[in-house]
Length: 356
Image (cartoon, rainbow, N blue to C red; front, top):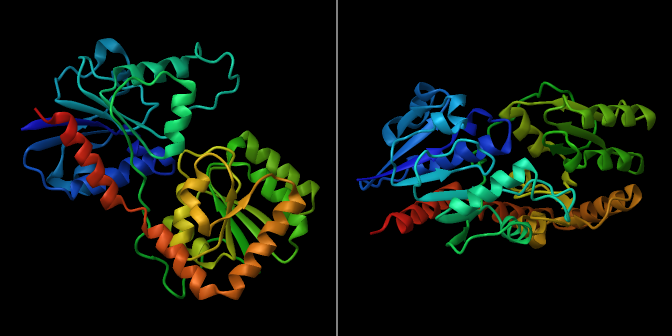
């Protein structure tokens, strides 16, 4: 029997993209029966993981000391899969190594970046890779643009949509009350999410409120709150912080549109989540987002506030002319991204590396 180590300790961070990726990939892999392979999941709470995934995996407890070479895991697995490119947990031995690349850290100075610690570590991961998987073609292209990719097999495996079943009951009321049509967005409130542009847009959309969900203990969130006050939008724009899964689905289900002006995305999971509910999506025309949104999404080419509002008005007008037809197309686009399929593709990559 072949052994695979899944370096997945970021599963503890379920409010973030890496944690969501780890959880849903493991869930998909747990549903694949292959008696020729034993997979070991690395996590902070093995007992909790075992309750979630059962006997599908073996489990190994995560300790932060394993970041240091002297304390690295010394068992010789047949394959080590680093599920997240920024993890500092590496094998002690030189093992067959699969790296999943989500996105590269932002290159602030294209002429002088290779010496920075995070980029040095990423290049080291690439160098030791037996194969590489990317969550989008954009992730692959940007990695090749800025780093030296070894001559190994490369695979693009799209993330799946974690929302399959709609949770909120018909009479559900969210923790945050809503009193007029609203636009919705979600994500950690950082500079690259570009939520500030949405706030600047809102004076040109007086018939809508805006709800921004996600971690807000950030410098960018403080700046946005200042801008809200400056523009007199205190009763129309709300930063609601982290929200429950049910509240998130409620906002997707009941918003007039989903808005996502991100500057950099390796994939853009909220886009396909919103599509699952048949909601029109308005997204940036950059990085991976056109790849994910396809022809059914609406795109901003720049972030002038009045222009952004015009794109939303035009998009909602087109949506109103064929709500049923466009809704069907949005739901169908969302269904193209499936964790069962993604897990099967990863499993195929494992088998291709492990074959004699």
